[in-house]
Image (cartoon, rainbow, N blue to C red):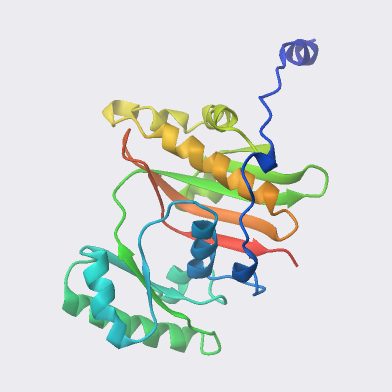
Length: 251
C-alpha cells in the first residue's frame, strides 16, 4: 500500500534536454586512453566549467612564473596519466607559503614519485592557489547498461566510500532536480548552516551538478566516467571550487 501511495504521488522532475546547449568539441582532449588531473581539468574547462587558475610546470625554470600567478599559499601536485592517487606516492604538497619551500617541494616530489613509480610518464607539476574552506561534495557520472548516463552526488572527500551517502539520477538533470538530489542526502544539513556554520552556496553547486550531467549526456559516446572530488562549496555567494577531477574516456 505504501508503494502504491508513493507511485500515486510521484511527479517526474522537469525534463532537461542534453541538446539544450550546443555540445563542445572535446576531441583534442580525448586522444589518450587515460587522462591525468591536468588533462581532465583542461577538458572540463573547454566544456565551459569554471576551475581554479592553475599552471602545469614542466621544468624548474617555469616555477617562478607559476608561483607569481598562483600566489601564496599554494598547492603542488604531480601529474601523470598513470598515477590516479597522487597522495599515495608522495605527489601532493599543500599550504606552501614561501618560494624556497616551493622549489624544495618541486624537487622532492619529483624524486619521490620517480622512486615509487619509476615507469610512470610524468607530465609535470600542477601549481595552483590553495582553495578556501567549504563543504566537501563529490559529483560523478557513469554509464549504466540499462539507464545510460547517470549522475551521482554525495558527501565528498575521503568519506565518500566510508559513508556512501550518495544520490543517483539519469543524466542530464536540471538545477531543480539537482537540488532535490542534495536534499535526499543525510549530509544535507551541512549545506544549510549546521550548528552555526554559514549557509553554503547551494545555487552554485546545483548549477555545477547540472552542467556536469549535461556534459556526460552530450558525450556519452566518448566519456565513460567523470569524477570531481572534492568540490568545496563555499558560503552563500562565494561559489564552489573543484579541487580534483578525473575524466575517463570510453574504451
